[in-house]
Image (cartoon, rainbow, N blue to C red; front, side):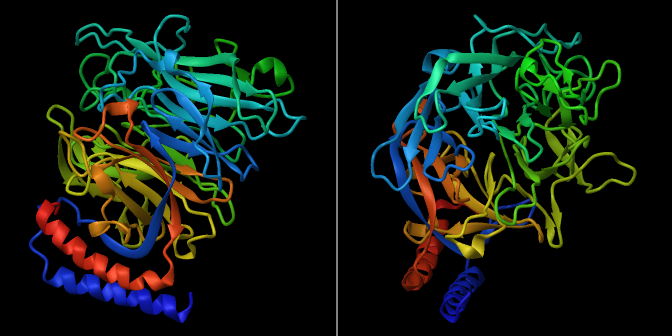
Length: 509
């Protein structure tokens, strides 16, 4: 970092310190409030207007394209560096709607995940030209693999729709069109309630496909279609895959005859031999468990990457958390919410009890300064992102970039963008000097993130009422994170003053 950069960041930090000393009292917090840090970014729109973009990813080794998912069922392909609008690579709108209600900004179903096989560009790989989607779909035409849990003490559960992992192919790795006729169902998960579907599918450095699932929906992991006495997320038997991290080899077993991994019960995929739960009655697809709604996760890959699996788990009423997922571990839901004990009957939290002696539960990522968690004074639903391994913003290298859907609900507005230090356990909010108060414009909510082949990152935002109409848009934008030029240093200080005024007006803290 050069002298100009140091002076710019020091001046900005001093401005924020002065404002903090004169700031009004903040709202009550269970945990310390998230403050603005000293990393500034500029957000450049690369695609929009869109509907509700929520994820972006590239084929392996491809630095020229970003595939963007729309919740309403469109897979778009954006040529990076080109002003042209994204083209439609795959249209799944008829598959995901219904059950997705495209007029409801609260609906969590739809097209949720996309992953390219690591061998996508390798003609010698069984994964050549193959990619995988995660969708919410109607029952018709979808065989049921994992049933809806049923709790005898509650009303009988109802199979209302299924979440589906499917395989598709392209004619060539450089094609911009995904063949809809190539679809093969890998497995389906029966769902009663419409929320807590998870959303990410991604290949790990080990070459296996990972999928994080929500606890089934509802509140407190209890009620209809939730098992007692501890909830779905704590059950690793009964064919219950809700509230889990799953790991499979999705290639059809006929193409991997030399593999030592067992073939699944439906014959469509293999189960890694290293998965931890293979005792009689246990679910062998489970890699880890105890999750509430792990909407977004990502592997830390690229130059300097650790290979770690970093996952943001959406909380209930109080705590949002970020976890490092490791094989066989139990992440605590619904016994704990973050590091706090959780009361399932009423959704409240009890004592802050990190690393309970003798406990087998794993808490959020811990650094030298604390745990990666925050309370609902700073947001209502964590939106996981990626560890930054690009080169355009050096001071961000190695930080975990993520956000929160909104600062408040009913209607949900004013999403936020954060970065976390995985070593210290500190969370800070980005400076965004192009916007007044460093706040995203037009009350947009943060629905997801993207990462391209160079390790650069993208924020996927959309409008919700009163400015938009749910997953059908048209208020969505894909923003690229880019560096703020040094001459803009004065803007950071001016922005700090505007932010101070804005905070007073909004009463955010």
